[in-house]
Each structure stands twice: as structure tokens, then as C-alpha cells.
Image (cartoon, rainbow, N blue to C red; front, side, top):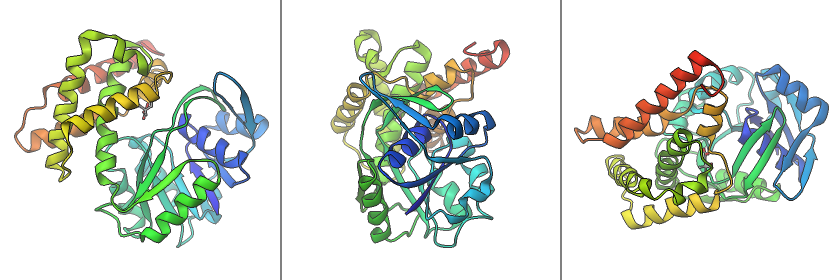
Length: 313
Ligand code: KPL
């Protein structure tokens, strides 16, 4: 299967590197010329603290590279999903599949708006990596990727399974399930805790559990998330969701969350697609969302500081 990884961030580089290392036919599409140059010259380098390896996926800044892809893994930030979807859409094959394991809500809908309901696959990933150079990542956790059927798609489960099997064969532990939506909402809640708190405090994921005074904030975010989930039609158990958040923090302890990485680079974050979207779901139903609202505003303020004073504020 010819795979196109769209985006050369922490996850895109990791996915393309793993797939290429396992003999997959993979290319990366990035709009950043200097990243494309580095990948073409030196390949991608993945290190995990013990060893490092290099792989050589193809790489281009030209969207026409999408023309022979059978599956596109969309690995850009949520605010760029629509842009890259429209950029590749004139070039893709009629039977190409579009897979999103991005953070945030509604990436599936953004893609179905461009490619229709039958070619989009939703999912989430617990892979954790930190971008350490233009073509280099620190792989903090080799987590599971899960794909599945979604209320906004009608992609056949057999096609979803075929993609999951192919990705697993190519080194990315991937499973397929009938209904991914509860898992997407759970991952959203996990991100609503880890991402803004690590970004505001400037700590790696695991350190969140050492800071006793924020335990109540974490618990409050889980409660708001579970309530938002039920408004989205997903019944989650509070206890189980607390366990999943805790498990994610422990598993990805050595990672810098994607939001902390963005803040450190003075870049736009995904806050409006994570905590902002949970706050909107609650407020639209007339429910209070104090923590998600506050964290959204604080991270937007940090973005403002970064824009005013340069990198990392
Ligand atoms: O999704 C992530 C992110 O940083 O965006 C986790 C899983 C929390 C890893 O850091």
C-alpha cells in the first residue's frame, strides 16, 4: 500500500520513519521547504534515549505527490486539516483513504466535507514523540493506534481493518474497532488534561502527577470532559476515564506534550480544538465549563505572548 504522510511534525516524522524502516512504500508531504530538504538529504532520525535509527521516506513539498497514494495519514495540526485536505484533493485517486488520528474534535468531519463519508477513517494514537530537529524526533512512547467506524463516516470496516493490518505490518501497532467515537472522545479528554497543563507549567507529561496541587484540576477536567462526552452521545464512566488519563500520563511520562512543544516554539496551539471544543459543547447545552474555558483563555494568552515576544514568549 502506497502511504502518504501529510505533515512533518513530531507525529508525521515518527510515522513516516517507522513505516519506511519496515519496508513500507511511504512519502511525506510538507509545506516547509527546509524540513523537506533535511528529510531528502539525511532521512528522518528517530531516537528513544537508548538508540537512534535513520530511515529514508520520500519527501516533497509538491501536493502532486499525493497522486499515487492509497492511504493518506493526516498528521498536521487540527487547524490545518481543511487546508491540506483541499490542497491534495485535486490530485488524489478516487479510492484513496484518508486516515486521521489527530488531536481534537471534528477532524473526521473536516475531511468528510472534502472527500465524502466513504473514504475517511477516524482514530486516535497514543504514540508520543517530541520534535528535536527538522527531521529528527525523540520517540517517548510506542503507544497503540486505533482506527474505527465513526458516526460521520460510512467507510466499510473491512477497509479500516485492511489499513490497520498494513500499518501493524509496517511497525505501527494498530487495531481496528467498530465504533471509534468513544475512544476519540476519551483521547480528547486525555489531551484536555495533559496538553494545557504541561504547556502552562513547562513540564513533561509525567511530572503532572508529581504536582499535588493540580490533582483537583485534573479531576475537574475529567468531570467536565465526561459531561461533554455525554452531550456528544458518548457515555463514559468517570472512574474509567480517570484511569485512562492517569495511564496516559504514566505511559507518556517522558514526552513533551504537543502543546508544550508548540508553546516553546512560539507557535499556534490546538487549544481551541481540544479544551475550546469541550467548553463549546458544554456551553451550547447551557452547562458551565469553568476549567476548559479558563485553560483555553490562558493558552491563548500564552500564544499572544509568544507572538509578541518571539519563541516561547
Ligand atoms: O497526544 C499527545 C500530545 O502530546 O498531543 C499525548 C498522547 C498526550 C502525548 O504527549
